[in-house]
Image (cartoon, rainbow, N blue to C red; front, side):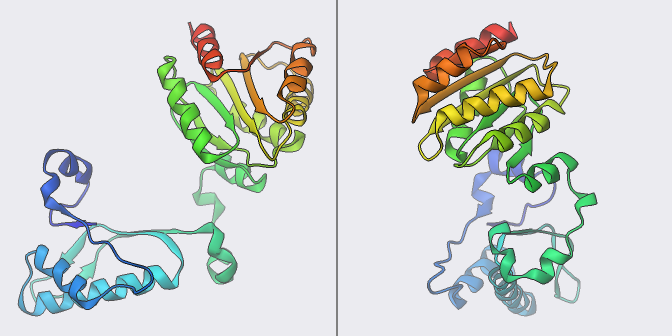
Length: 264
């Protein structure tokens, strides 16, 4: 994706003048083709020496992206000098964590002091966590379900405080770690746990919630648990009989209604 109208306000450009943003799809089976680099340079309004420099730049950029197993290369801005040189003035590179085993030298350069401390802690516990600005903490298994859960929170009148995927093998240890991370956010007014028991057993997750609640103690925010799938009925019974202030729901609509109630 590229444009002559880059910079800080590229999102506004996409909204108001989308025709100024160009896209070039690259088939990974054949890689970047020469005609594509020329098309990009042409769409950017270049000619002569600058045109040739841009085609070389795009070729090198794609090679770097592919060789590093990156998820994203963002060059913003790209500069054309008065003598027609093409320079990357600033760049953001997002490496694919799943490919770091092929690049131990990159992993060795990681500086966790430059990252969000909570996200680093979550990563150490094999949790996929992203901090957001809302008031409802989320604990979900599976990225797709997590996104749907965030949507249902917004429909219920809340705002998600985080994206947190505990993965398909959630257990008492990961649930406790997730609780610790969510509760570090002072903006959290309620926690919604939404687990689909496909690989994981719902009763094990429920026991993990109960154990974490008792061990952490003094949890002042309401907790809503929706467990569906393998051993869901046993899980609901465990929570209902635990004596803890945990609201259980079978349907996602019930969970959303409970979120509305506790935020009211």
